[in-house]
Length: 383
Ligand SMILES: [Fe+2]
Image 1 (tube, rainbow, N blue to C red):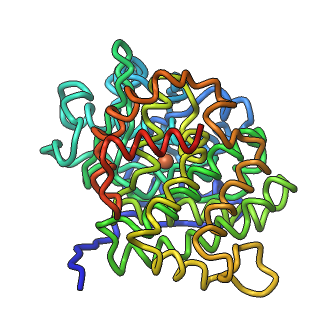
Image 2: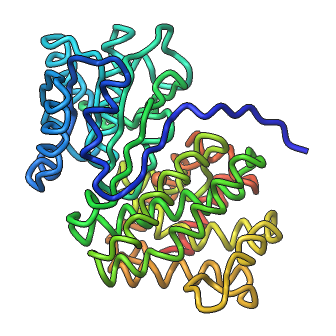
């Protein structure tokens, strides 16, 4: 029997057009001044303006911080903090992909607790309560809206810092599928594979428990059943809604059970070769599934039981091998690389990356313990 401690911290508001309710929701939190944190791509798509209009309609004085970059850095956080100090907001709104939401959380850490963001690297370092935050995701990916971590890169060393604290959980996640239909197809591909990997990794970690399993299972059903649909028809709003909800449920699963070896293997690929996170996790995931089968074959079979007649989910008869193949086929369908060779990874760097992978925090939660030699062998299998 597994012990757990679960308290829902984030209200989830879901539905097409729900962005129009952003002002009312912020008012319910008692806010009269808001800072919206967003990135140039999302602003160009018009989503940020919709959010700001909804806030202003509710009489909330709103200021925009538009300085978020992909893989947000300590410099982005410092610039956003400066703007927050100027306007003294009562609510922060992260409107965009994982980068905008993470940058917003990071600004909140420092605005509410002082110091600099690296002071909060790790878990539970914040002493004071934080400003209420509303997350409005425009991609179905990281699940940042429902978990309490912000990933921020050091602008000088490029080291990615995971800053987590329950106090950094968003008060509200506003999930509007209409905001996700305009994303470029490559963003749909990269974020979708990441979300799917969250469902698969959380389902088997050593920390898994009845709460995380419920979220992982439903995330898997929603994501695996709809990923091919959004790739084929980006305007399929039902499929987009399922992906968005699936990514958020996967975020809740991460919050309750952490991640595993595919994420440990992915981080060195991103740090050394700039491989985008979704691509890095995706290329390693089929190999991690095969590796983990020795410890959690029954759990994978449990997931395969979710397949129903006519659904695109992998069938039970294929077993773990079929599950790993299913991920590889989705990768190819999404026009993502399925080998490290095709990503032009220097083979001489594999041992160095294996050393780095073994040091990743998430490596410790993989259901089958992984040695540095085994990390190297997983890279070699993926080459
Ligand atoms: Fe991820």
